[in-house]
Length: 150
Image: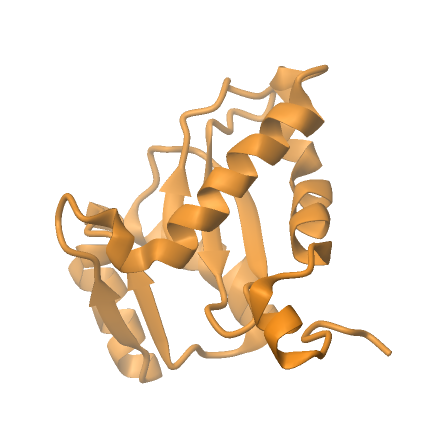
């Protein structure tokens, strides 16, 4: 889990994205947001956009952003039973999956949003679909479509 940005400020005031990646399936959520969020607002984004689809995670790996190290965030996840792990400062490879996803997202944003950068945030569902429709190595290695709907 990580924040990416800044992007150009949209008509809705968004300038960043919260990126949440399932390490098992490589499935990702791209959530348009504002850079200046509190820990409580970050938790609400997580609950509204990730929890409602997947339930309570066993663990979360993130960087040491103040929103993820805040007492509120840690208390919330402690009560949910979610273990929190933090990447080493100045060593983003600890959360390599998120970093790879962010690189892919930045390419997708450039491709999808060059025409209308003040509205990139309304394209996040399309970006998410494009990313999640890509066959990842976990699927090739297993010979199965992890996210198949059929």
